[in-house]
Amino acid sequence: MHAAVTLHIDAEPLHVWELISDITRMGEYSPEVFEAEWLDGATGPAVGATYRGHVKRNERGPVYWTTCKVTECVPGDVFEFAVVMRDKPVNTWRYEFRPGPDGGTDVTESFRLAGTILPAIWYPLGGFLRQRRNQRDMLRTLERVKAVAEAPTSD
Image (cartoon, rainbow, N blue to C red; front, side, top):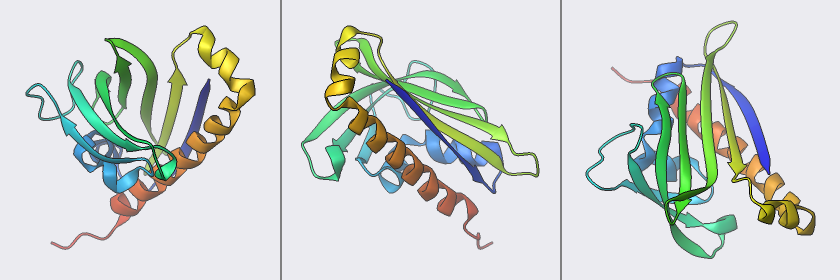
């Protein structure tokens, strides 16, 4: 199962990347992740860095922690992490940042479940509803990032 959404943000790619890759701010943006913290001495985004995200599924529950590992990290270009269970990726989330044709940034957020038989079985039984939910929530996340990135700054 995979889905992606793209939104244009009137801010430079590096600035938008910095907002999203600061996982300690994800609670401001995500409808489901309400807090996150770096683990094992990590203080910022880097390949191999791990963090823990506190999730409220469907904004109601259940509430649980996920452990995530940064798998790709190029400032201003890409930020990707995998939700891991027993050191195996189960879901990969990716943000790509491309300069817009008239300035600003086209940001694409996507997710991909690990290629096992379970998503293939689950999808027709209700997984398609989760896919739609994720698409809606990814757009909400990017809209919230957009509001912060485009907010006037006071000097």
